[in-house]
Length: 201
Image (cartoon, rainbow, N blue to C red; front, side, top):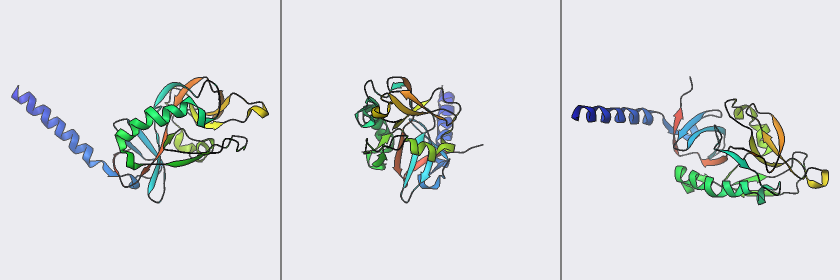
């Protein structure tokens, strides 16, 4: 029994040593690089002056509605999910002070600004961000499309139900707000925190 316990302790120590080897400051991971956390793997989308834009590699939630009554992200149940349960999980992982508030422009796909802007910490990508980071977002292993926080257009133009969505291969389309697909949260972290970098083959 003592030998088994000693072997187990040695294995745990070896795993921890290997994990510590891969610890780097977030600012040192370039766009496209990945890091592992207790809540999943993340992709670096962009390095800014003192913060880093990241997104989950996979779907963080599956089979979630945007809302049951509107295409306005500010009023949506998806925002409640991101600002509530998902944000709490991110805070537990990264620390509240390390998650930066960021502004999302809720301009529709056809360029209308009726939904304004939103200050938030964790949210889906906007349509414009989906285009900007498109090559980095492609993950053909995703099991489903995922939401943006961008309305396709407005009711006045005949699009009362449609929200922009992204496919695993990076294509765009629209879904009715009451359909259930994936959620892939984006957030901005302070770049001076340490993370476990994933070494790509």
